[in-house]
Image (cartoon, rainbow, N blue to C red):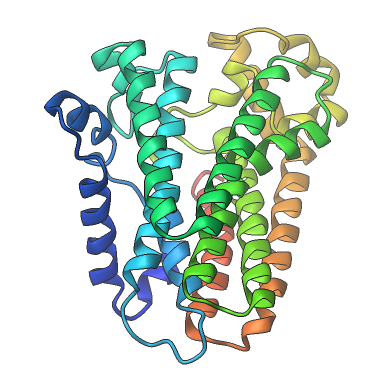
Length: 332
């Protein structure tokens, strides 16, 4: 699969190393125990999409051609820390034993310490945001609130076969899109872009985030564990009925699917439910909606008239669709 176009930006290798350095520095604590727990997932790696979006958004400033500013690096790191903190909490809720190919924090140190380490990451994110000014601090605080609202929406809809698409979209906007839109907005703010450009970058991040989560949900249905780098079919197992499943419930075979869902699944019933969703026209409908969000993200970037960083952001959105196409072809 082709590399993400963001990785072709000038100075990106140096900027990515600076992101890693800032992440590691951000989790240093007075005690070795907290430092180890807070840095556990950072050491496991990650794509760092949110910091890269903050850096690229700041790079959309007219005439920008240098390495990323420290402010954009730190702004992106603050959003990444919120994301990491939410993963710690998610793993406690889900009783997960692994994350990114290593022991989850809760499996290694217990639920209480995992929650406290997640809280520490949120606190460090807030501290970094405050160093970038009151607007960034307020924005990050509001984003943490939206993330919690999205999680509550998701939990409230667990195992609900009559879940509405509005509920699903509200959940992914809070859980996923809010962080990406905030990363873009922070990049624009610290680069002192014009307000209208900051607003379209924020809209781009939201549209990208919605497409990102829908693509991820489609892959959860059709991809293998090796392709995903995590367990496949988790949403059906855990009752997080996503867009492909909601559309499949309305399509031919929906009655059988409805009888299978509504409680935890495993074994043959899980395999059958996953096969029904994978074969349903609802899968292509979900892919079509992801395309619509990517098209909207493309439109947001028209304001930048081909500036390299904006073109790279747009390329990253299309990279989502190419990744999905690659998996579908490989598994055909």
